[in-house]
Amino acid sequence: MPRVSQDHLDARRSQILDGARSCFARHGYEGATVRRLEDATGLSRGAIFHHFRDKESLFLALAEDDARRMAEVVARQGLVQVMRDLLAGEGDGPDHPAHWLGTRLEVSRRLRTDPEFRARWAERSQALTDATRERLRRQHDAGNLRDDIDVDVLTAFLELVLEGLVSHLAMGLPADDLGPVLDLVEESVRRHRRSG
Image (cartoon, rainbow, N blue to C red):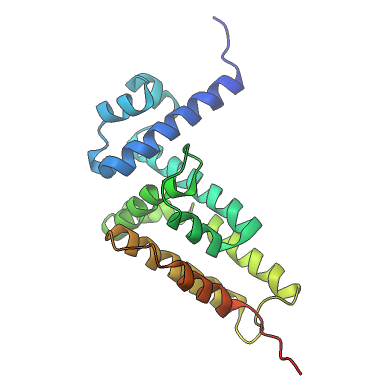
């Protein structure tokens, strides 16, 4: 029997994650039935669960993948850029940050209602916090970040703003006018040099 290449396995895994992302975003965790996951991915139950032990493992892998992608944006451009990308609305392809919103909303809901999920997610969610803290430290070392507040406090502040934005979007509230709010958030962590 011929062996399947790692490239093929990776491509199949990405196909499953991309289809599952849209399915979970559209139907939520409970509504993303195996049948709907099959339809969204174009693959059979056997093909899906060959790569992922069960639906929860699939969802955790998806959430972890999205957190990794968000952490990459944070490392390059900061957490406020992730927030700006979430506001940008729908984009093309599963890599567009606006597609992370559905996963992020479902993660937030499950963290609140499912202690077992909360314990499993805690092991995986550190990447975004670490990327934010590291970017802030680099900005601090470059003299661009305010130095009267600890980097860990600024990290927590930005994460709280992100969670607030996610809640705002989840409630379907208007987001067209939030650009200046994010400008204010960004300005609040910057170092202000005195002229004179």
